[in-house]
Length: 407
Image: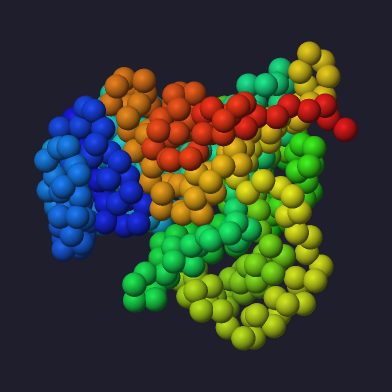
């Protein structure tokens, strides 16, 4: 199949292209970006390891004609052009019109709802679209599926990802480009810590203020407090698994960082900052906001012993209340993966493509990862891609699963 990688030269797109260019079933890889030189540089860099012909193409997704032409020449598009609240619907609509299968790493909940609403259009066009096939959402959704599978009834369901609690992370590098400007990921983050965000309360989809603390006791030896953030997981997991109680996407984050994010949130909501200026402040924190955050950090609870990246489901099994925790095993490979946003996001996107290429994922419509992707196959493939991810006894596919009686 001919693969179009939109936004391929970006950090996450480049990882996806690197992995996808070695997959069976790929016949050509087209790296597309509005910056043709950047696309060509990636093609040149991967030329020696790719197993298929590669070429660069200049495409600006705001140019409807150029976008449609590029999509019509492809069988599948990998869309890593963000932020998705600006560009996600544009690309998906064009892909459906062109009859091109679609995968992305959309991490905004609002466009996820809009994309899911295109399900009927995609079915009519014979297009299979998987939205949110990255780390969070993506890996997080598949961990949630593993946890839910241990229960007969789901009450509460949480997914969580780390911000600044792992060692050696490179979050700062992902927040700014080579010129020091905030990236789309940074702007996205400001969008999802301001206004109201989606979560589940009483089994219903609701909107609440973000950065609310959630105390969790997920397994023996793993407890602490994480904070709500806007991401698509509550939107899609609500549809897929129908938790009857509470569900949210959480950040595992230190008190100082969440306090600074809360200062930015308040200023965005008050109209003192935009998403772009808040992202710039995140990259280069101001003294005045840092001082305001210092006072707030004192009252914030920390992550304690929570795992950095996990999904936890509470409910019943055989009539008894239990808690099921699915997390990446404590291995060097898992640590390296969660510390690298580009690898943690780009590799899953390519592995989602692998399942589309071999027909595992092919039914038309717009799908979240947990209903389209075979989780067992995914984690087995992930272990092969990430050295040291396998957890040995009890976690050969890199996933540690714990089911404990609820206290």
